[in-house]
Picture 1 (cartoon, rainbow, N blue to C red):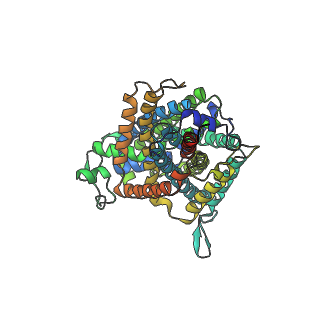
Picture 2 (tube, one colour; picture 1 turned 135 degrees about the vertical axis):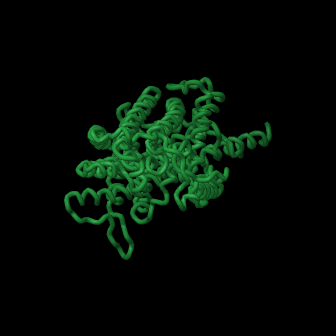
Picture 3 (cartoon, helix red, strand yellow; picture 1 turned 60 degrees about the vertical axis):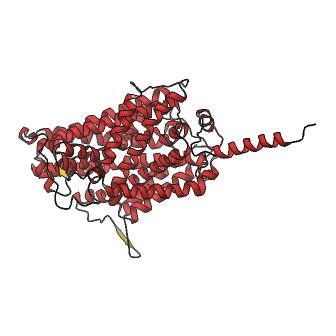
Length: 505
């Protein structure tokens, strides 16, 4: 059987109604918008911008956010067209299976698992750390880890993952309502920080807006820590300047991950042709405005050199530097609240990707069984919850942060290409949203995402390739032989052979 066999749109839609393997449509525009804001407005808005400004872009970090937002918007347009055309769980995996074939679908599904598994673990770990910081505001000395049989365990990560795993097993709608409450609170905190920070802005800090390029700090030219682009071209690693701005865009792209996660819930959306595009774009617009506001306040309050001098620079660094220590305390609470909903949406997205792959037979079919009453994939949700909790609670997840970006960007590249392929293959399909100026905008989306990938470190690429090799071993060792599409094709072929070989009367 061909490695490029595809699963028809009609089969995908039919599978969404399969008894015992289907999800319930309960989500509306507001739910999707909240989900997008919930997963994007997390630690990134408080810390990633400060790191990018100090180490790469200076005040032009605002442009880095705009570039990252434009790249994300182009890719999300492709997601919106697909999700409104094929409103099935699985996001990029499902879209790729319908257009580019099973092997690439497996690879992108494997990449999505990497993205959401590592993101969930990283965020859960940081949630436990920031929980201890909030306790410290009240002078409660409660450490973020406890020692169990000689092993340091991040207890906070276990608790938050357990809570949201339980909520998601009970029902997606209930989880969405809980996320909405937390999301509204953290958006108000972000707006509060922007307004307060505006009173401390010194216009002189915006000059030079794009600092002149300087040689990278000692150690930054190490073969593993330089970007793949620098490694391939032999260009000397540098800070600031135009290339610093582009490197900053690659870093702050982390702040926009998650909108592809919204597309994984397509099978649980009411009236998906209308609801999905509106919900996704509304969420992206809100997040972009918040990021631009925060970055302008951040670089206006203090010189980017102050941020560069702090290895753990964050939004709180700027407030402490201008003497507004009390605001830094508010930010600590905001970070904790922000991370809370991110964990929930990532757990949801991860389980839905695994659900779709399991229903297609690429992973054990028994995993995709849903409850008769709540129509949630409880088995998968519990399994991914346990995995995320173990990784977050028992390992140093900091080394995996860039893996989140490369997993997301690789999915964006393939979806951008796949939307062009589906236009050619199935022009007859009803599309609730169409990417304008196709194929030019989808091609631009793929090129921009690939460029951001090239600006990630060589070590990240090596780890990514190791993950892909592991995925290919599983595909050829199990998934390929158990895929429903392949089994159906084999059964039809055997039936044809039997009919042609039977003696005629």
